[in-house]
Length: 216
Image 1 (spheres, rainbow, N blue to C red):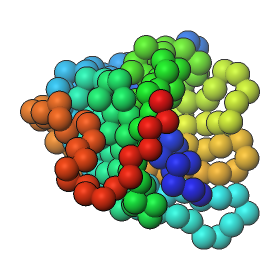
Image 2: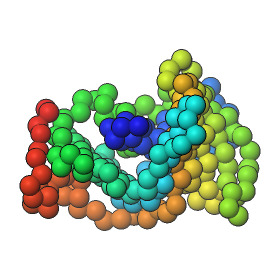
Image 3: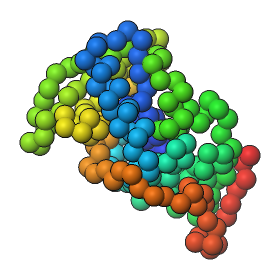
Image 4: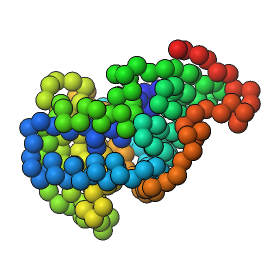
């Protein structure tokens, strides 16, 4: 999978915990509402994760670890191959192999697809949800919820596992209709962080010699 596809898929996976449903399993709805409330009241959030993408009919997979920072409608994403910043207006994507930064200004639809905070505007639309039961994963009790799209699209289903104590998502699996599987495991959260707005904008002084390509 190409770096750009990794980026958009990763943001989509993080967003799925906020995308909800109209035909609601009450227990699933209540759990997702609680999880959303925790995020909404958390202030600045830093999360560490492991991301794996498996292509259909292929034994191998692509994986990397990363960190995401979130504050209001802003985010910053750090991975070994690329970094991304979104300050609420402009987005910068730094591709290390190309030693370049792409500068874009996403429209409203693109922001909803990419931004874990902006996606709240489509809350309660487009998915059915079902409580799949309590499980124990690595000694930790979790509640599992399955989201399925109401209309045919690229996704087959999304499986969200919430920590039973905190209601925070600890694993999200996104299954595509073509058989591709994206799996994200969140290993740690730091909530109520005080992030400067400058964290969410590209600072050219920290990347001397990097070419900035304005695609606005």
